Image (cartoon, rainbow, N blue to C red; front, side, top):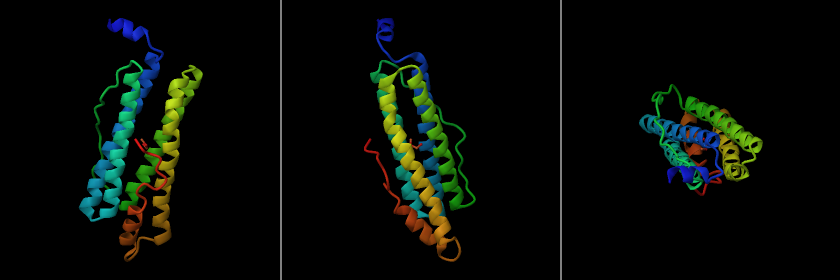
Length: 179
Ligand code: OFO
């Protein structure tokens, strides 16, 4: 019975594996952003903390989108183990620099997945991934905007205080996520 289910599907084992790898990335993003939120909270950067708590939730929703897609397509979505979470940061700016770098890596991964779907003519998965393509562009924009806020306001005096407030206003900015 199990074999029949596996044979009667268009999702290939290779694509399933790549989608499961994407689950690892989304779960890592969620875990890392939660850790960043906690660090911000502890340092008194309340607005950045709320932004990051929300962002951590969104990344989990992205992970669940992949769970649903893989399982509906007859595959098996795997709950990943997440290791090597960073807990300490030197500065608030470092947090947002890491977010931008991480989002760029995730975008690269999504693009590779899309390439794979084109090469294997898996247009259903290609179509599914378009939501992630749009989401990544928006998330990169928000992360870049956060760093621009540091540059424009400057961190001297009450600068950091104001930066924290402005980052809080980025909540949902450019957010296509209705997941
Ligand atoms: Fe999942 O959207 Fe960024 O990483």
